[in-house]
Image (cartoon, rainbow, N blue to C red; front, side, top):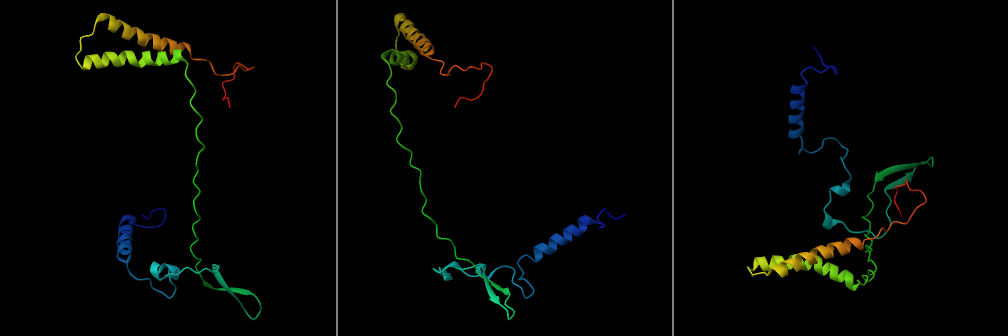
Length: 165
């Protein structure tokens, strides 16, 4: 029974068609018409840039005065324009930290760093040094959390969670 498209044994026909296609892949084209423009047949070093503008089609007029496209003519490759690179402006200076904020960051990283270094080097750590390192870490975290501010401006509509630009 034939398929919907009327072909019987489509798998066998497809295999034969593929083998035929592969066999004819490198064969030269038959017929008088060229399969693509002549510009693809030439080598790059034989091509010279023509400074005069070139149109894509050459037109001729017949005796009746109507234009007729007579041949295909390739346009020259466009001259690449120099690229403009974006150079960002210099960044603004970093804000100055208050001494209390500096101490909080030093405690946050300094306490655990001291304990880690002392443990890695197998130093004997007195109990008061361990207590001070842990207290510096906790105090640093607490101070930095307390210094956080709500930077969202108050809005008249409290149920709007949209973006603030």
